[in-house]
Length: 176
Image 1 (cartoon, rainbow, N blue to C red):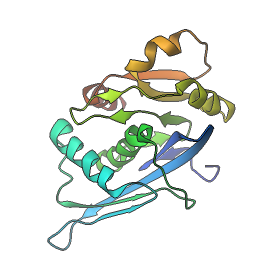
Image 2 (image 1 turned 60 degrees about the vertical axis):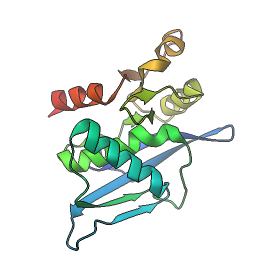
Image 3 (image 1 turned 135 degrees about the vertical axis):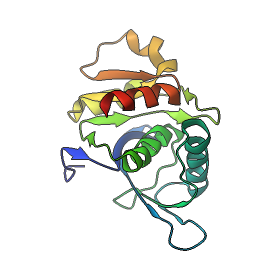
């Protein structure tokens, strides 16, 4: 993570849980025009089927036409992500490339996506937020479903609550 630039297009950090440990991993995405009839989905370090689901959600709920584009998703460092709480970070890295907006390296995202576009509650959020604080992050996108448990504690992080993808689109419009 130390090699990331201050503003990044197509890059997002997610705190994932492996056993009882929290690891911060970067997700990188790249979108290109499809030059051959069938678009490619090249994925390293993340579940390829999950990418298909996330792109379908983006198309159906956010009206972002990714079906005719080549999509490349990578988790640098040779590690793999199996934590469903990484969905939001992966989708945000893809949207960042598609929309051409940069994301601060001090911002992370946590949230599992449902097929209806809802951002679902994640487990062990407190542990994840403490790790982000420890490593100097300033903000994090989190599910609104976790709000009650998080409000009871004080964090240095700016918590940006999202209920669904409509909330995410609204935030993106404000940052354009």
